[in-house]
Amino acid sequence: MQKKKGPWIDLEKLRNEKGWNQTVAAEKLKFSRSYLSSIEYGRRGFSIKMIEKIIEVFDVKYEDFYSKDDSE
Image 1 (cartoon, rainbow, N blue to C red):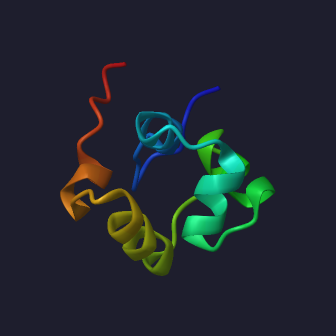
Image 2: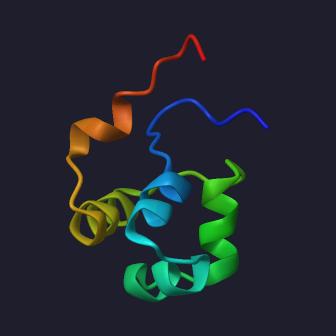
Image 3: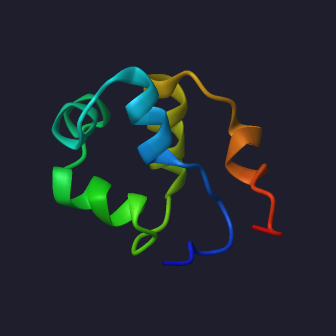
């Protein structure tokens, strides 16, 4: 499935690097597991509040949300 344009970051990769399943990551982000799943599969986008929470929980930079190589 192709991800949406705009803010992008591979949440599945980030949470796997932490060793977290979707339930653990969703609890830390204060999202539901199904909502996190929808984001990971590109069915939902990011709000500013969501980006801020992801930055805090996963210790990433705002710029990382725009660093995807569009040639993939």
